Length: 157
Image (cartoon, rainbow, N blue to C red; front, side, top):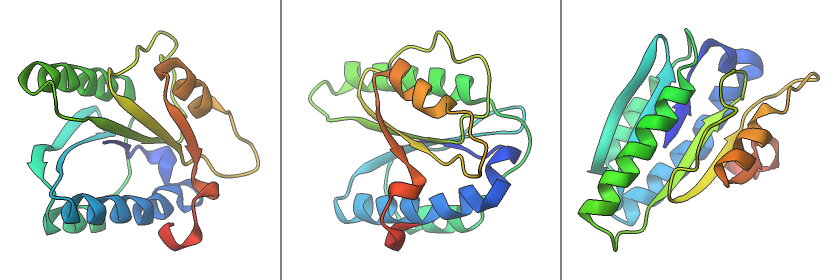
């Protein structure tokens, strides 16, 4: 998972609403004993929170304390995620991999971004009357499925 936790994601409580969806995914991963890699994009650079460890209650604690601020090093996070996927493919080629990118798309420099090499879903958390629509274009460039936060069931927001 790549989570954009830049300052712009605080607008209209977008990141806060996305936390409900992430909590649901973390719970599913815990029940399935899945491994989770988690990168945050905020401040001046990407930050690994987990790298392929089994899902645990610690993810819920991390999620509760997740705040937003600073810049948007999303491109760097996507590049790191792609490298991680490549390494995992070499290490365990039979292992299914999926990636979720959570962003409001309020960034530049994603014109030439390449697919991650695994099934990818992009969750658009851009809210408000004026929307730039960059997240949908990012999903297209990544060959990813696109989903908007407002289309999620309210139980997971």
